Length: 225
Image 1 (tube, helix red, strand yellow):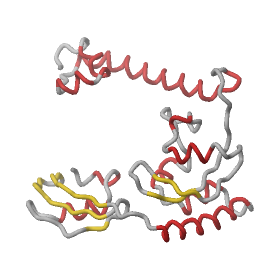
Image 2 (image 1 turned 180 degrees about the vertical axis):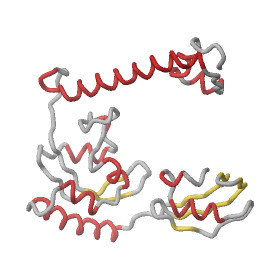
Image 3 (image 1 turned 120 degrees about the horizontal axis):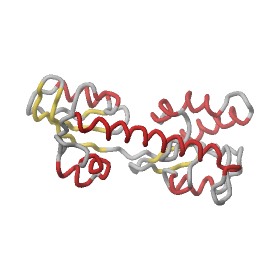
Image 4 (image 1 turned 120 degrees about the vertical axis):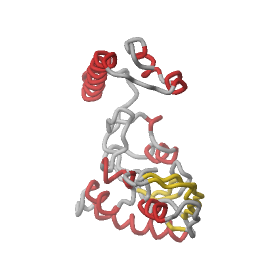
């Protein structure tokens, strides 16, 4: 673990871990994002530390969910009445960290906001969207995320396409995005194919065996692998 990993790690966890001496065990620490940590430092060298931890995530109570539903119900009223846009409301009220980075959108694997049903993050969202029409806002809904923690959210269905064979008339933006990504990947592959032979590359053999993207450069590298 590196001290500079603050974008990936909870700041409370990070600050506590780097205050510990080698072998020292922390008191239970409440993080901002996850739950309660118990942290033990194994070793420390400069800005790098090796730690072990136990995490306990407290369950969300019914009372907390009910309070969140009441709050989101008032937010939904503001959105529907036009007092605030859904996007601005998400930035103002959402506690989802992803909103700060990507906005209030569910993104597909290609980064597009057009998401196939099997790419939705949880089954609760699939069921809720089945009842909405384009332009509809859901009521505040309870859901369970991938970590098993419950929360409350409002969904907005901006648009929806019926199942069909992909074509330029209906899917131009998606096809253009896919074509651009393919072109970018080919440009990167061509650059790497040209540059790899000029560098010494040392790659763990077990990792190389499991990663086709590494294997395809092995033949072009005379001094690596």
